[in-house]
Image (cartoon, helix red, strand yellow):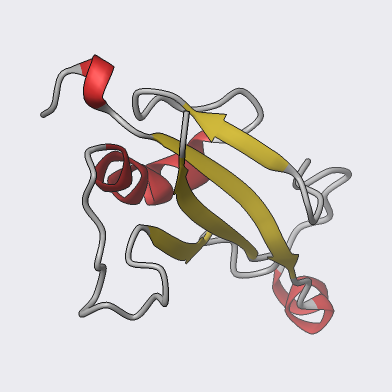
Length: 107
């Protein structure tokens, strides 16, 4: 791993939220509150650390991407992103998936 002073900052932006009402009605126990995300919210990860407001389940999914981007890497899955230093990932909530855009930014 690079020294912390050389790690890039990663910006995390909530791009899209879906809700599969049909699946919720069929399979989910009633919930009063499932997610605090809103489209357009942004979070900053310094030194590949989890920003406040990012829940632990989605952090486990996004951490490998954040860490790689913070270390200067990218080109995930044979360069599927136009910007090689970015990634589009989603949480694994099958009822309410949230899509996040991860990108390195200049400090």
